[in-house]
Image 1: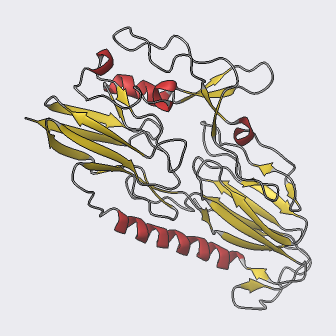
Image 2 (image 1 turned 90 degrees about the horizontal axis):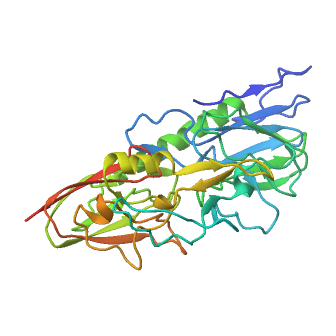
Length: 357
């Protein structure tokens, strides 16, 4: 839903409009809304948006922006010159131990570092007033439901870029002008957010028509903007035994996995993709399930027979748009059958490979 903007009217609540779509200078404070994620439900199966709506906001010194977080996003202002911190980092202690497959054999990643959600990303940080310096972060939303709006008051003129630390390239700008300068009205900004979302939807529907190369499956097909397809293209693929299929990430802002195995087994990985572990020094540490984080086999995935690791488990680990993580994986299918797989990061993102003689 769109967070409704409200003018906090003071003595001159009826100030005239100075320019089309702009409010004149006013003694009252403005609370401007921005949606992190779609400003209203997308209503298209498997489609989400990884963008800020509107992506550019203009307010006066002393005004606030209210960020509604509609999805798994952060709103993060960084110190000048600092790159966005990574979402997932290796733990400094307590390596992986005791992970066995269904046949009772140890996985190769025993002894490797656990991957954890970066506490710098996960935890809220900074006062909710911003003057262009320091680190201000909403933190990650809890799994219990959408958080309350993250409201930031801007106390110094300037142009401030902010980021979502979950989705690389997802950013917006708040332009803060003097107290007596005109700024967009509530109605104007709400219309701009909806227009931006409609444009993203149009792009997404065109991207949905993609026809991958032979024996290729795309994980998402998001283009370079806010589009986020949480599906495989195609969802079902039929190949002959002995065929190698390439699974390719086609997203700049999302990560995905290619995870084969029994539904109950892969579903449990999905359910526990991140799990809290007690931390005596502070909030629980969110540990990423190594069965989802790491590839099931190294240096490459072996041929798939439906019986791998005792129960048909084989996984790519996390695929990402850039190093050090891979963006594609190849699997050769050597036994006829119908094999289901999923992305264990995104519930409901499922696919099927049918192998014939």
